[in-house]
Image 1 (spheres, one colour):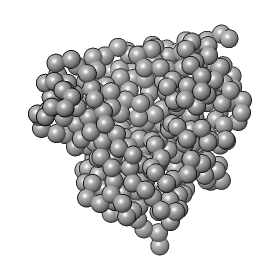
Image 2 (cartoon, rainbow, N blue to C red; image 1 turned 60 degrees about the vertical axis):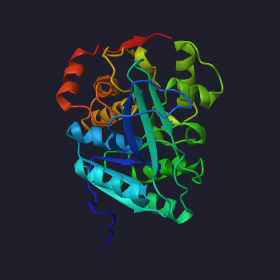
Image 3 (spheres, one colour; image 1 turned 135 degrees about the horizontal axis):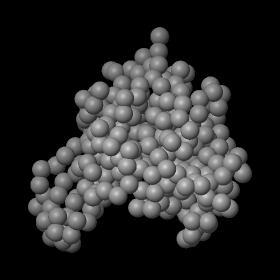
Image 4 (cartoon, rainbow, N blue to C red; image 1 turned 90 degrees about the vertical axis):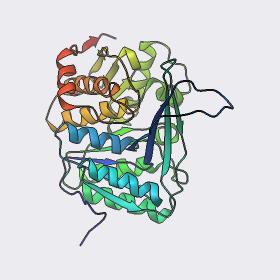
Length: 324
């Protein structure tokens, strides 16, 4: 009998993997000074990490979801409690080192946001294998798997390639949102890759200053057989979608941002939800743009509200085809 965690998720339409979860701590201060004691206001605590953020937003959007993640120590226990409180089914892998914390300070006087992200725990080979085992079990009946976030210390850069190979073996499409070595070492098997412009630049080692250069890089990933589709998020300019059949441009939905934390994860969550609903990629990405905009309006990594997302979706513009 296969069991893991207190709220074991099996049979979900969307399964997410978070290899480097975090306890997200968000607070505010009037002014951030260097070398001085900064008096902060009451902190907000959220379960964080790419795939966990994706799972929470997908659940808000009404999807059947399960989150797979490794956690350890008291911070890991709190992360698990927060996920359970959000009514997200999960499969947790116990690890020996404590889960990391991430710290965000909003400076009221300037409107600037300061984000401090720690590297995370070191996972043993056995703990890494257990994560893959739990993911494979949870994904057997899934419609899509989402692997999102950084890889913690000690996890080899080709780990996400192992995830892609596993998804291909069981016939489940993989949406991957990562950066650094995890992105650079993907060779095949991804259904949709979602880098930001910065992550795409780091992957190719080029500036990629123009839209044409960004799309050319995205199409190169497709031509190499790495991914069937690539969505490049370009911040306030929206997003670009590249597929083997062409390119599309999506405008951003203008909002007054409260926090940028988790907006990219919200976009990925909505795209995954759209895929499970049988939507075209174009419609799913437009839904992702709307959900990311709604997420910008929430504090910390608090999930967006479904009604706000639907309102943003109505305001979002249809994609514009780009003629190469």
